[in-house]
Image (tube, one colour):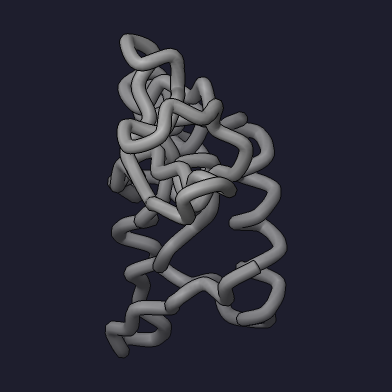
Length: 124
């Protein structure tokens, strides 16, 4: 996972060539239904960037809770294992995930030649 994140950052950096941005913070959205352990990702990030152009950059993770939508009653709800991921109003099994599977860069705080900026990542 960290490798994919670093590859995305390399691609982003190429968009600023020939300059190399000084990144201070990478803001990442991580859905609770992605099986990604945020603390582990932060730790591997810190190790991976320490001798690179991203040295010193922090990884800040924003957790996105799981939300489902019931196709029968059209209700949006927070599914749980205790409820068998079923709709609380009609008990129908979850068929549609509205959010919680995100794994994307939300924004990057950086400076170029003394100018500070925050780059919002495009939605995909």
